[in-house]
Image 1: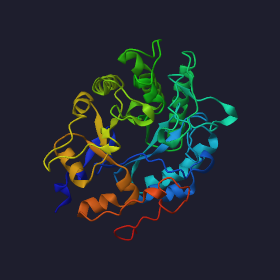
Image 2: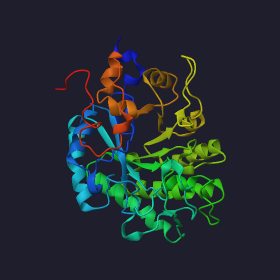
Image 3: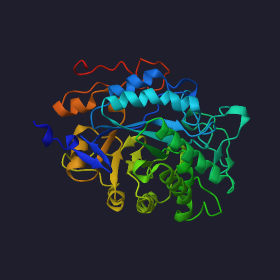
Image 4: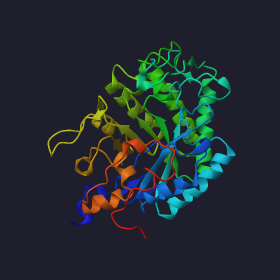
Length: 367
């Protein structure tokens, strides 16, 4: 089979970026950035997965000291952190890949005692995640005041500027998976009565202010955003996810950002991508049609479903997480339709710089 007959391996122009294929490394939390500083072993990990003309999205990276919710996740708010990212970005660029950094603020999704200096988590609400969700005891948050919101928006703006200084080609705003931006977006969490709560327009205001600030700082062509209107992580649920997703897709067009990256619906933790061989997922189609620039779909895709989604114009690019984690040469394996390494879930979040990180075998020994 010729490469040109494989939809996932066709060329694509994402704004100013020329991609040689449609397979994207999804942002994956890896817990290997000791003391919130990216480490040299990350250069090995990301460059292993880099291909000429490929798009990689780096793991969720905190925009401030109170944005972090987990141990050993990277940041981008200090000079040390910026400098630590530079050789990692260089290693990816040497392989010819495009590299975006995902910017993150966890909001209320923080366990008791995690934040420095006894600080209280911030959120759209003063209501915390229910005790015992995901086996954790969550710290009760405080509601951000209206006067404090511009400061958080500014944290994202500065982090984006720092990411470009570190050499990244762009940034992805993490508006998914129950973290701070999504805590404003979804009506089950956002119980505000000011202009940041209530109506769909008000709940989306915070996210769009961040998009605008970051786009103004580094250029809209270097900005993407990830959304998950249909997921319920950390009790972030919306009563009308169809309307939320469509509103955001339309509203984002105003800023002419590079891409919109959306996670497929999940049921009890399983992505709903089952169906006949000739059937593509359909839930994200209204968002895909509404958004004018590059649309990335993620969640549960394999080679066949990815090829089908591209061939049917359901998405422009497909992001792969666990399969790319376990197969550093995923692009090559998809090209020759080779079997995939099985991922080892027990090593996803350990701090080891090799095990479950850079030790997955290649189909062929890399040069």
